[in-house]
Length: 147
Image (cartoon, rainbow, N blue to C red):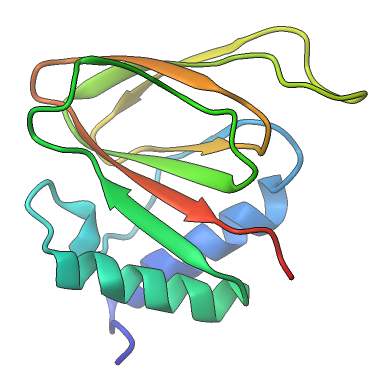
């Protein structure tokens, strides 16, 4: 069942953001709308709803993972073949996207600070590191390449 109201607007906002910045490089979104999955205490059901709604709107598989409450405050991941949105749920974090690989890959890192509610688009092929505050929680929203 689709989310109504603000949740549905949040899904449309993410889809529009991705349509503009997908494959264009890193970008930050300060969303105007909220979704039940956008809270630190979101349930697995909330995340499943967002996965299903985004998958439908984007026409491709979406996987969402929630960091663990005891996750390390300094973390590293990637590079990955998916388009990834990092959604800072609480606290803050200093995020660095490292240069990618390939002919058109950027050669300089991208640095930003995310606060609660903000999203970072990580293009495929970019590894990242994060130095997070003690209260930081985040979601990783991975959008699989279109088939």
